Image (tube, rainbow, N blue to C red; front, side):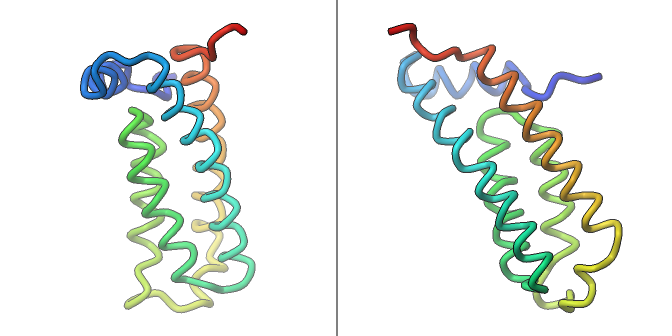
Amino acid sequence: MEPAIDVAVLDALEQAIGDDRAFLRELVETYLEDAPRQITAMRTGLGGGDVEQVHRAAHALKSISATVGANALSAAARELETLTLPATTAATDLSEPEIAALVDIIATESGRAGDELNALVPAEES
C-alpha cells in the first residue's frame, strides 16, 4: 500500500516555513483537528441533503490535505468535490451509494494520514 503522506511534499512545506520543526508540528496539529471536522461536515451534509455543505467540506479537505502531502486523501476529496458541484447536484444525488462509499474512503485515508503525520512530525516531549 502506498504511504498516506508524500514525504517530499512535507519536506518542501518544512523548507517553506524556514525549517521550523515546531511550527511544522503546529500545522500538523491544526490539520489533525480540522480534517475530522471536515469529514463530520460531509457526513452531516449527506444526512441532511445539503449539497453545498458536502462540497465545501470536500474542497477544504482537498486543499489542506494537499498542503501536508496527503495526496490520496486530497484526490479522494477532489473526486467528492467534483461529484457534489452545487450547480449540477441535487440533494437526492447525495443518497447515491458511491457518495457514501467515497466519504468512507476519505475517512479511512484521513486516519492513515494522521497516523503517518504523527510518526513523521512527532509532538515534542515535555
